[in-house]
Amino acid sequence: MMEIGTKSPTSFEQRCLILNAAAHSVRQRSIRGGEDIEGWRLSRLMRDACTDTQVKLAERKYGVWLQAASGKILRNCQPGI
Image (cartoon, rainbow, N blue to C red; front, side):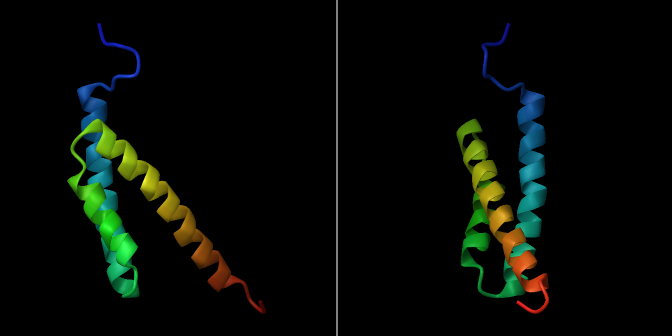
């Protein structure tokens, strides 16, 4: 029987795989822009996460990064502003 709040190994492994794939996208986007050092650092954090705590931190920071990135895209797409 597992304790409440623990993750099954399969779930943890899936989260790590998803983070690793997303890290590749974050890295490509930060390199393409040329000046997104924070995105590059985030991609390293996401790729290197190997404990539950590191995965949670990487997921949280990735969510913040996605919101900031989507905000930049929306500001650039608004005509006449």
